[in-house]
Amino acid sequence: MNVDNVKSQMRKGMLEYCILLVLHKRQSYASDIMQRLKEAQLIVVEGTLYPLLTRLKNDNILSYEWVESTQGPPRKYYSLTEAGEAVLRELEVSWRELNETVEHIATTK
Amino acid sequence: MKKTLTVNLGGTAFHIDEDAYQLLDEYLCNLKLHFQRQQGAEEIMDDIEGRIAELFTEALRDKRKEVIAIQDVTLVIAQIGKPEQFAKPDDEEETSEYEEKNRAHANARATNGNGTRRLYRNPDDKILGGVCSGLSASFDWDPTLLRLLFIFIAFFSVGTMVLIYLLLWIVMPPAQTAAEKLAMRGESVTVENIGRTVTEGFQEVGKRVNTFVHSEQTRTAWQRFFDGLVAIIGALIKVFMFILAIVFCPVLFVLALLLMLFIITAVALVFGGGAVLVGFLTSTIGLADWYPEAPVIISVAAGISGLLMICIPIISLIYLGFQLVFDWKPVNAGWKWGWFAVWLIATVLFILFVIGGFPIDYIDF
Image (tube, rainbow over all chains, first blue to last red; front, side, top):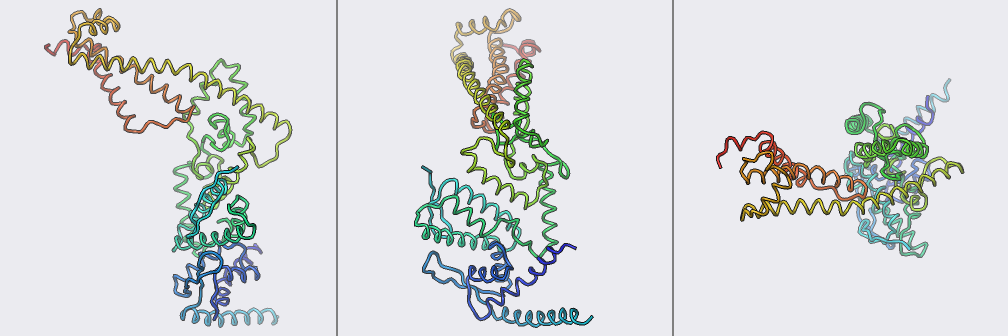
C-alpha cells in the first residue's frame, strides 16, 4: 500500500468540498481561496486550483464577477450559485455521514 | 546590460529581460500543452496569465524595479507550479487514453517502440554539429570522451573520420522538439516528461551564456580540462572551415559565372546563332570530333545540357556543405524541385543527343 498515494487521494476527494466551503456565503478571488487551501495543506501549487475553478464554473456550481482592484488588473471574484449551495448542502451531509462511519468503525472493535 | 522586451500579460504591459522572457514563454507553452486536453483550457490559461501579471506587479512594486528579471519568473513558476506538480485530473481513464495516444503518436514520430532510442544531433550542447553530443546522449557516454575519440581517430585515419562525421551530420536530424530530445535520451515521451524537458531546457538558456559545457553532474578538474581542450579544438576547426570557405568562394563564383556564361550563349545562339560562339562551344566540349556530321545546333544543345548535368549537382553539393557549416537558410522546395527538373531534362537531352544519337538519325534539320 502506498501511503502517500492514499493520502493524496483523500485530499483530492476533499478539495472540491473545501473550495465550496471557502466560498460559502462569501465571495473570494482565486488567491484568497488559494491562501486558505494552502494553510490547510490541501494544495501545494496554484496551478492546481485554476483548472478546478474553471471546471466548477462550467458545471454551473460557481459564478464569478470582475472586481476592480486597487493594485493591478481587475480580479475574478468567485461565489457559489444556487446550484452550488445545493451541492454544498449535499456534500456536507455526506461528509458528516462519512465522518460518523469512520468514527464508528474506529471506536467499535 | 541586457536586452528587454515588452509583453502583454492579461492586459498589463511588462518590460521583461530577454532570458526571463524565454523562461516565461516556455513555461506558458508548457502549461498550454498540459491543459490542452481539458475543457476551458483557454480560460485556465487566461486566469494563470492574469495571476502572473498580478505577481509581477507585486514584485515590481516591492522591489521598486521596472523590469522583470529571470529570478522573478523563477519565483512565479515555483508559486504556480510546473505541470508535473499539478494533481492529475479526475478523469483518469481519459488521461491514460490520451497519454497512450500521445505516446503512440510520439513513438511513431520519435521512437520505434517503447524506450527505443533514436539518433539525433543535440543542438543544446554542440561544438560543431552536435553529432558527438547526440551520440553520447543516445548511449549514455560522456560527450567529451567521444569528442576526443573522434578527434584522435580523425588524426590517424587520413580524413576518413572527417567524412564519417560529415555523413553523420547530414544523416542525423537535429533534436528540435521536446519529444525528439526525449527520444534522443531514450526516455518515454509523456506530457510530464515533455514538461520536464521544457523546464530543464530553459534553465539551461541562462546557464549557457557563461558555461560552455553543462551537465547535471559536477565535472572533475580533469574533465573540465578536456572540456576546454575540446572547445579549443572545436574553435580551431571552425576557423579552419571558415578559411576553407573563403578559399572556395572564388571557385564557386567562377563556376556560377561559367554557368551563366553558357546560359547567355545559349540565349544568344537562339536569337543570333553567332558562329564564334558555336565554334567556341564545339571546340571546348569537343563534340565536333565525336559527331562530325552532327548539325551545329545539336552539338551546342548537347554541350549546354551536358554542362547543366554536371554543374547542377556539383553546385548544389557545395551549397549544401556551406549551408550545414554556416547555417545558411535552406533553399525552398520550389527552387529545389525546379533545379532538379532542369537537371533531369538536361540529363535526358544529353543522353539522347550524345549517347543515343537519337535526334541526329531521326530528326531532319
